[in-house]
Image 1 (cartoon, rainbow, N blue to C red):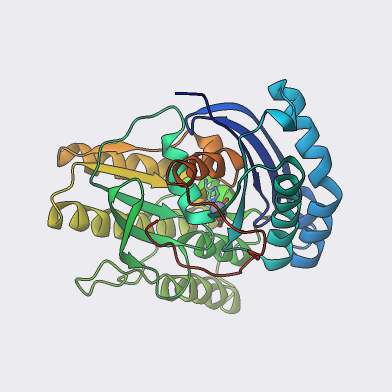
Image 2: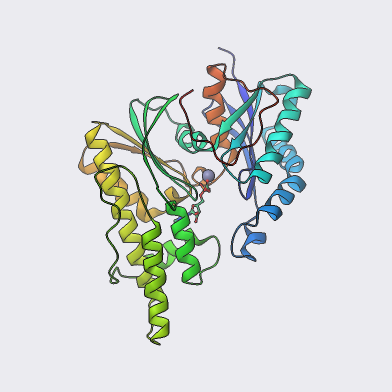
Length: 336
Ligand code: KG4
Ligand code: ZN
């Protein structure tokens, strides 16, 4: 079969990323232009600033990626991008640029759900066996999804309020750690001890999550100590938080693996780059004979390679999009 080259664009939040992916597996070239330095000044992503920076950078990032791949736009078999979920203004930049390329070069346009991208980060350089369980842990999602094949997604559970990455970011703010919060909380946690009592997280027998309670708890512990002029150990508080949320993730994932008799687990999303969480989930998988796959750390946080990997599955199934597809801030992932 002829090789298929897809140029993929990701611009759902604060990374402008472009990749050329061959046959959904091989990352020929990936460029990620991160806006972290700009947003750090504001303590979080400012949507208007993010979309303006995507607009300034998108053409440059496409050119840089093609140069790195040593290929031309004419060499592409399809053009793909994230169309949802994410920040509307940011998504729009990637969607409009990709639609224009598809129109000019008369090649299919493939609109990809960002969450399918996170899952497919595991397919880069990897062959997977189905059925499997997919755990997505990112800034916007905490999802447990049963996959009977690469194109069938069944939600078992999700967060009912904050996503786990959001909780990390909020705890970072409480502890006055700079944006992006997650990696900084992990760094502090690695130097602390889990000595602060934490609340019991959602334990209703379902596969759903809830992280808003623990965020408020950390806030209360911190501010009560401040008011009483007691010293707070940020390392220990970060560690106590991390241990508590990790235990909850591990328990829910373990339950789903056992209940559905699954032998493979994929983890993905920005929080999957957290070594403590990766190790805890791996240990649990080893103890019950489940094979765990996790993307290389560079494919955990937002990148276009994962969008190209997902786009290839849509390409194989001829699930092309019309040029009237628009960016959407929230669309739940469905089977294709
Ligand atoms: O997947 P991602 O890049 O964007 C979304 O689609 O949300 O994930 C970003 C999230 C942020 O909340 C960030 O704080 C979190 O992932 N994150 C981490 C770590 N690295 C990134 N959280 C905990 N530990 C980390 N090492
Ligand atoms: Zn993401």
